[in-house]
Image (cartoon, rainbow, N blue to C red):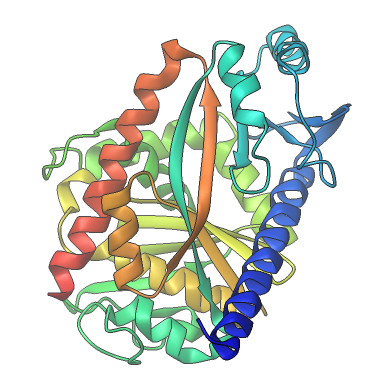
Length: 339
């Protein structure tokens, strides 16, 4: 290896270190929009403040490289049991290499998930990679024309399908919130039976328990953006991204089981990435549930940068595996639609 190559490698290592630092700051910041932070020394436990979803424990910002003992993990777990919240821990392996041993020693099961990022500072070519699966072109099968403006037709999914980013008062919001619930509830890899009737019932329940109001409030506050793919007024696929400064994470992209394998998940992802860019986001990242899904995201412009780890009690690990199957469906359907 010559000097130029060594300099190039050092520069790449520095850029990766900076990227992982931004993601670490993001992971510490994003729960604070809806949770209280409890200090446990090397660990921070985020506790839901009011309505919304339960959070998790993770390494304290600025102490990610510190050794963590099993006793410290068990102390946090005791607090989680006291609060009646899931005994979950989430962290980035490369940023906190010492935590896994202590977590596993405490009896939790650790799941590995490839962490992938997309650099939007390269301009709209990055959006084209997501939208068309072409590695940089602006249009193509699976693209979302006009996605930067928050709406478009989903190529490969039929002209009747419209993909758009919605606001808090949009009548489609309850259905956009409900679609991923139905997607994750049916984890097999086939087109399923759940359709418009089941969607209406799920939306009604989520309105009733306040879940839709929580998402609407986060949209108003700028903490969440929701994209939905609709056909004849029916929400078929939806997902979110959660911007914090110049970084955002794509989460919860799911497709109604009866509408799978039409490329809708990819179209929703493209709309979310375009919306993130319009908001000034320069780094979009996501966690893929397995290597197969990660390779598909890599083909549409994301690159693998690290490993996200999620720890939970053994008795709840089955639900995690079900989620992996659903994400595989969404990713495979996207590629099938553009090939």
